[in-house]
Length: 294
Image (cartoon, rainbow, N blue to C red; front, side, top):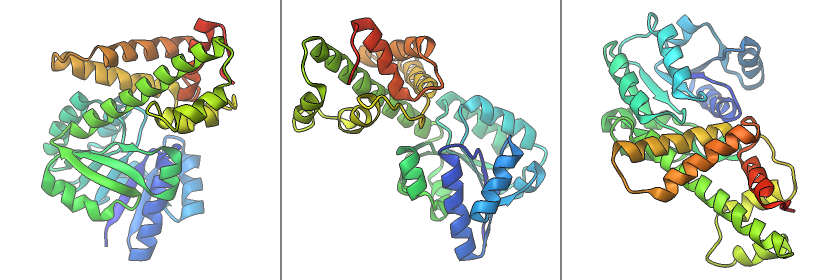
């Protein structure tokens, strides 16, 4: 009977840990949870049947999952947990982290006999609630196979390479999200200046070659409605595009569109509240063009 543990009960982590708890109940195991805000862990335990525990207790799990804002928070948790971690356990980091941090964390944990995998997730809060997130794993193939049966919240689960590869794929994936969202916003701003009905324009675009998740879902549901529901923070997407930019520099790649996109999102994060939903970045495009996308 496997004991899993989860740190980081935010918009994604909370429902992911809930699926672990349900699987544990069905299989006779345990799911331990911890959060900086203790009340959040206690509420999770009351609602989903997980167990809110201290860090020393949490570190005795067979598989520890983390889902935190950045690699810096994971570094902090590693420091706090270090005296309590036991050899043979697995640490699966679902944070959208930095590949360089994955290499550093893997090396530090290997000294303790702990096996580390970077495993960021994609799909948003709806996929987390459905237990159907896409997971991209970096790390040793045998470690991936060992944890794979216990990924109760995973839908499509793919081993993409060695340590750091998961974070690299996630950064490029999110950079592509940023490209599509920004470019579609620019295009709609041009149409708005010409008096075109944007709902009708999107109907055409979404039946044509210009369609994307941004045009089909994000802009119609969040921008044109002016709701901008806070599911994935603008500042976090800016962070992810920055990681993609770092990779471009490290590999001396020629990727001018991705590099420029990182700069645009960095600027949007500074002008627009970084805590707003990532789709709120299009408010900057509106300001630049003197239009409102409705």
